[in-house]
Length: 252
Image (tube, rainbow, N blue to C red; front, side, top):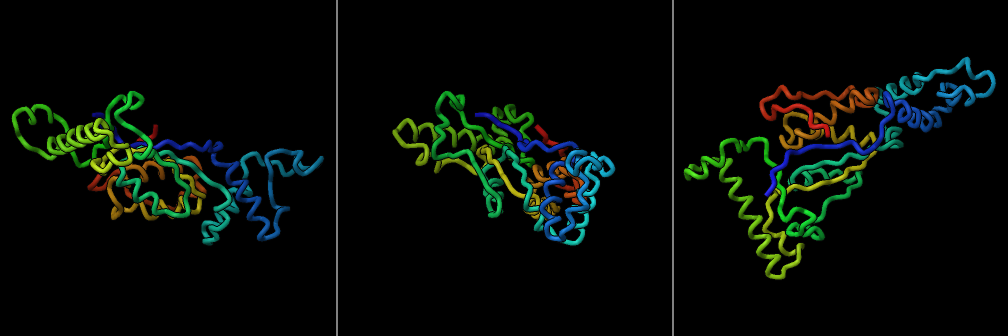
């Protein structure tokens, strides 16, 4: 049995300052306003011989336009750029993630993954809930002192034993998985456009959101605010200075 911590990994390569992503959004949005002439591209040759006069390598026109779109609530234009993130979390958090139906998902399958096989180390992995303390748990278990940590570890070990027993009795993984708990580790890739990511952060980072979801979403939001601030800077959340999950960034 393996205990792992939740984490995330941004799979999409985001350009320096998010300039290329902003320029992509700008190119689409300018069609709405028919203001293509205001685009200030990266390369002088984009506008011809005299284009050097409008050369702005920092994508200034894109920053201004996207900032305007966010401020005005014209967020449909943000749907033309997307981001993929790999989350390592428990099945409970994954169940909440897939409720964002506009996004696309690819998730580790308990139907097809046989965790008793060598490729998984012959063991199951579980996500430790932030509120479960497993320090000194072995000593407490030996002394038959029951704590939330020792009880949780016992339940995970029991689930692993039952799962392997069912596999050994000829059950398929999709049948044996019925004994697995919500804290089973899973990996899920979430791909969504920037408008939907803004919606996800607004729902999943407030203090009232599920604490284990906030464990992932708050640090992710903070990282994206550094990578592409124009799109995400206006979304504010308390992290980690609240009364639930006192953790730092979980960037891989």
